[in-house]
Image (tube, rainbow, N blue to C red; front, side):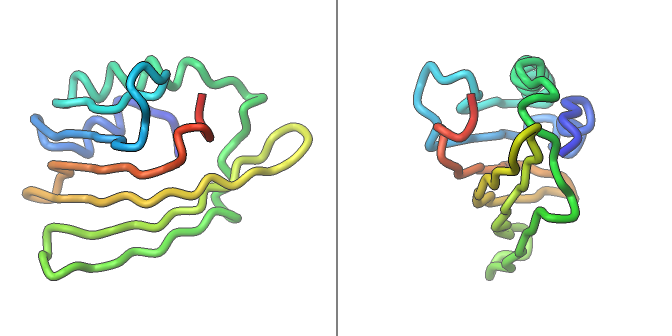
Length: 118
């Protein structure tokens, strides 16, 4: 939510993986990033594309639901992020699957409609 690539990268294990399997090849949003350095660089490049006119995350209106799984190192998050723009608010819905290792993200699979991000 903060669009801080350094903080995001530190949530991952050193060899952690971020995947967005529904994003088509060649899209501006990264489909797969491996390791903290690549996650940091890839997300920094993506975040640079944002401007204030793209919207600000409305934390109070955004919602999430966490789901536990049989594996204590895996959980699923359903997220509805509300972005307040100059003229209107929009909601981006996504599902994320997290696999943890020693309290850090070893694998994050991020599922969302790629046409909702540029």
